[in-house]
Image (cartoon, rainbow, N blue to C red):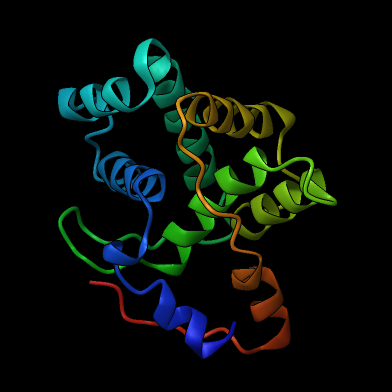
Length: 166
């Protein structure tokens, strides 16, 4: 991964609103507060009547990644301004699901899921990613497809950098 890209996505301030929402919800789920009424209200405000459906699909996706991950996900505590590689990778799954027409979008979605989970991702959770992506898109929230930040290529090339997560 390029050093300048790591710097580019080093803080929540560097993320767009849909990315920030996904990182914030990921952190809430990771600490056991995925059922927090504020998370539900925020998804409802962002996505309208389909907010609950999007949150449920995202919750299932995050739990699946957490349970089948190649390693334990590293996420920052809620309120921390930093963004971890794993947080960026989870947002990247949703972005890839939103852009299936971008060349080999399904391949990109599968690749981004395989970076996070051990083995081939289960179709039900690829569908969950597509469901979240679809609701976000229908609500006008399009996270950017950050192809330059492909974490798998960085790991394979041996150029990925580990950072302290606090």
